[in-house]
Length: 439
Ligand SMILES: Cc1ncc(COP(=O)(O)O)c(C=O)c1O
Image 1 (cartoon, rainbow, N blue to C red):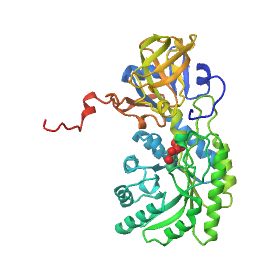
Image 2 (cartoon, rainbow, N blue to C red):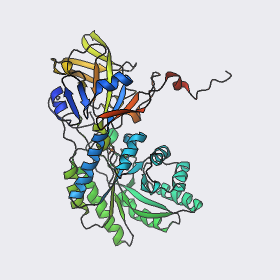
Image 3 (cartoon, helix red, strand yellow):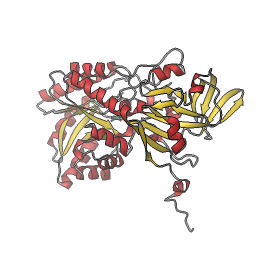
Image 4 (cartoon, rainbow, N blue to C red):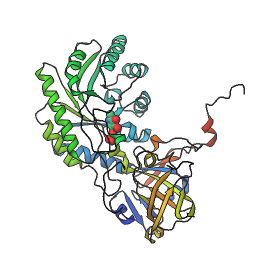
């Protein structure tokens, strides 16, 4: 099962380009991101290389913010750092006024290093260690979304020991099917995430009585790559009901954190429409009088990123294989979720040449190291460059050094220019920190 709903024939190269305003094909320069030729980036920094468009990320942040503004819904956007945790990207969202949603102390420290104040950070996740909670509380974290009764007790004990009071929200599991891939759905009762609705009232009351915590509200996150507002509506109606029930029971509820998960168009499916999403949120929360927060990741960074690669060789073995210098260790999503990523040749002549089916693969010794099967692509020679699209979220963050492959460089495109934001890892750095006993 792919991680998105689509039907019909795969989009051709022209369709892929036409659906992405951030990309342009120039007759001379070839494929460009925000007007910057990808060939210029590959010439300077080699391949594989991650390329991110700052303008695209700003535009997507603005689209979301403006959609809520148009509905007169005050919304606090907390960027989900796990989607892409590069310091330059965190800095960009800080400049746009975003807070952050983190799931580890590493993400928390990255985020504060990028200048996002601790008070604007929410800490989510099903298993936060004592050391992590202690460090986040000592640094003044704004909110912790607790996922179990055990965790509420743990947070209170740590906060009391530190002499601070932790703002916590209870993450409610709404038992709603988000209609997404089984590996990225999080709001079903069978998933490990959150607290069952029936357990919330008693836990809320218990939390309100504990010395180290101030329970501020309800949080929820039902999954990722969600393409319809309907599962959200169902989940948020349950959350709104819970807010009313808690208040009726005499509890104070100030915050509703509606999570992330907004889907994007990888193939030909339309991404979640921010205007429709904001209108639905207004309807469901109208009159509720809560401070609304959300935690989008993929929506903000996914379409802004490209993994730029080169063909190492063409192999004809019954079928045509294009072996790239990028592999599943860089972009895991196809191997992990059978995700579909658009692939475009960078040169204009190749873009316009007639296509035939090819499997696009990496050089790793795993059958799962496939980016695309039977993809209609032109005849690309060794050295030809290819752009794997929509790789800005859950791309570099999920990568590994499997097969002793050093981490690629990363480049930020902005205002018609580009800058290196991650140096390509040197091969000896791969064994940095390794110790051979007795040597
Ligand atoms: C708690 C929480 N918030 C936000 C997100 C961000 O999701 P997405 O990138 O799909 O918006 C995730 C990711 O699954 C998450 O677990």
